[in-house]
Length: 318
Image (cartoon, rainbow, N blue to C red):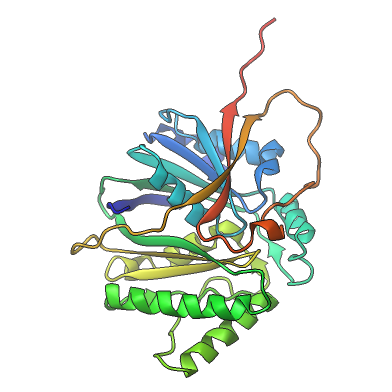
């Protein structure tokens, strides 16, 4: 599957953004939401307010919610590729941070890895038609570690090979570090050094905005892009991000030059049905009850993510 895909707009969601509703007026065909906290987050009042404030009034629906831990942004790009929409807004939803932190703890990657969830949300607009200052997406994929004991070493070999392929395909590309404070990140980085020592040029990384325990979940790659936006307008930039469950997201983007076209392997969504957004129901749970992305049954599948359909609540009439 190959075609031109562009990032045509992005911005952090602030209190002013939510209060003004200004983003709703920008026309987009589709609307996708992702969160590392998975689907239960839509029942949180703070999250619902953000969804309401940024959903384009022109979106034709149904809205999609896709999630696969911290690599949800990559999953959204893959999901957009499966659609017929001309353009779409992606909401990376990581608020309220207390609920997100509880999901990290439930997945056993909060306390053990020292992650502190940051209260943050971000919107990205993507399109099949370029706009001024647009960045072209050259490739996007999610590599997955297998369940076997040698899974990290094998994933490191695949990452090293894929990054070197990108270097050849996109001369002059710069790479932003994927590392975070987790033990798995440390092991993967060590494995990459070991792979490089066996032959091949070691990978060189620009620093990421995430260099401590403050954790930005799905928003991290967009913050890295924001920090390097001028560079991305001059030459290809490759963003990488780790996701719990042994996942490694890669997206390459940059100026719209040459004959480069979007390249990805087929996405493998697992459809989990329809969720009625803010339907009348008992008070939502204050803590998450389940996290799917760490279940071993879902390990080892490239470009895999969970997908729900969001339907807006139909008002009741007396």
